[in-house]
Image 1 (cartoon, one colour):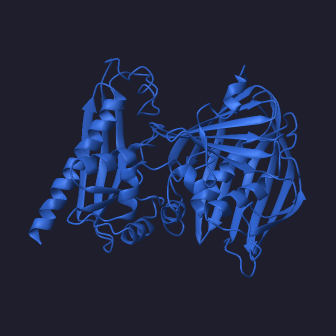
Image 2: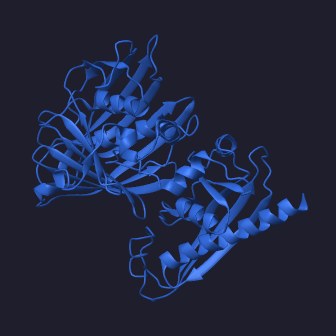
Image 3: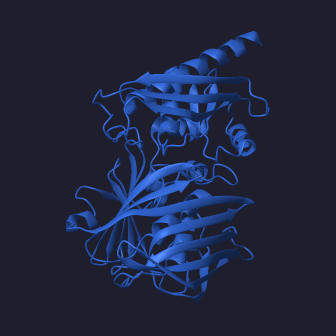
Amino acid sequence: MTRNFIAFLLLTFSSAAFADVKSTNRVTIGGNAFSSTVLMKQGKVRNEMILAPGVSTVSIQDCAGHRLIQLNDRARTYLITEIGSGADQAPSNAAASAGTVTLSVNEQDTGESKQLFGYTARHLKGTITSEGGSGSCGGNLHVITDGWYIDLPAMQGCAPPEREMLRSRMERDGCNDRVVLNTSGVEKLGYPLLLDTTIKDNGRDTIIHQGTTDLSPATLDPALFEIPAGYKPVRTYQELMGIGRAESMAVARPSEGSTGNTGGFGLGAAPAQSADEKTSATEKKKGVLRIGVAQVTSSVEQSLATDGWQQQLVNDINFLGGQGVVVSIDPHDREAVLEEAKQKGCDYVVFTNVVTFKTASVGEKIGRVFGSGGLGGVGGTGHGRVDIGAEVKVFQPDNSVPVLDGNNDFRQNDADATAKGLLQTEARYVMLEIKKLQAAK
């Protein structure tokens, strides 16, 4: 449930309506960094989020039309969710026997201000609390926000985002509860240029940091804010993602406290899974080693984004005959990762932490790899060499002592090639050593 809550929370906090403006943002969740682009034109907001190479989400908020449009570009489908303006409202598929969730929102202006991107930003702090009553299927949450907001043209017709993020969360979990909204303090927040959000759910904290890196005027094509030609409508979030009910719950709630592989501002839905991903998440193949892969972390001083590396390692393990499984919990919480892997039937779990990142040239910009042209001036040019080193630890889900504890290093001419080579080498090392352990039993 936390995964989908984060997704819609990020969408709604970034959805201010003003004409022809482009905002570029960087979001960090549990040590993983993501980029997003928010396009705004005449009361419509397009949110684009890059989760990994070739994996992105797109959503469009039509404030005047009181609706949210979510797109699945892979399947060429779309889902429309009607967004009302009442404070007491149930999801569109609510049954008469649905329970009630009370959502309390309090936003306070601290009185502090500062200049950001030529605007005067106000410092607001808030709390968002949801409580499910008797018969409710919606769980309790507590959210703390601390952000700097600027005033841009009003959000004409936009529904209160707090209720909508909760309603979307419940719909994705198949919950039909009615939402009762209680608000106090500042009603119109504006657009957040800096925002820290802490989500407390099931005894675990998820911390999200969002920062706008660029805010500028733009001339935007109106077609960007419409449903693309040839896309087919679907009726539910599960249909949009191309997954069944059981699979949907596995994606939405892989285990308690999961932060999920959600992205940053503009994320309206989790990415669709491929057939192989769905199989690996729901079925254990007979006679095949099932290996959980934790999110790849980095402890290098440079700003190195490792988003996409986890899925790449899963793919490499699958190529070598294993069954790679994405483990979505914050990798810094090892016990929780091992517990999720155990629930998913994994035989082993791999943790990867990047400890060195070196380039031969001076002054090169360290940044995102995989699909972004490498490291500004390095990728694909052959100028200098890139060296990446990582610590690799492998555990069994029911044992806190690693069965493998080693290092992996790879060097190549550009960042993409180096990162991919590093992960391919790691996959071979892990599979070879695990098979040796299996043979020794």
